[in-house]
Image (cartoon, rainbow over all chains, first blue to last red; front, side):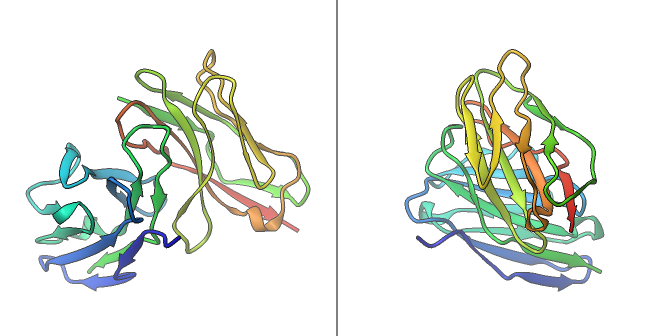
Length: 115
Length: 111
């Protein structure tokens, strides 16, 4: 079974530029998450989708971050404009459902460096 | 909201030593509990889980028991190997809320 696919693996941009990350979840997984992991810290949830609807985006900095999940499958996360403090690994995860008895499976992540 | 407290790292052990990484949580309702592991340069991987009180999750020689009375889910392994060197994350997930991660505990095992 294919896992969660993310691209690109690495990205370096200058501050104030824009960047987009792509995620393809495991087939059949209704729930999709985007997490931000700053070096030395645990992952922090940015947004949770159930199919193509947003369940939780309370920690998403909406002035610069946006995410969508068209057709309830693939998802993109965009940052515009980027700041130095956005340097982090962006993790996408998916699960069969949002309930706790369904484990989340993570992709390899996209490492973003803002210079 | 949900939260988790893990023991501070880094933890350095010799090969074949006994490992315990403490984890306590606060969560609404009756959460499921997970341990995830992050090997160097890799993404998060599910290590084990438990979904109800007194359940024991186990995988790759690691074990953790869901203790509702003490809201704990300590990770243990009887004999660690160098290949176990990684960062370990405890994460509760209650109801329809997402996983909540702590800072993680870095484990280094030396030969």
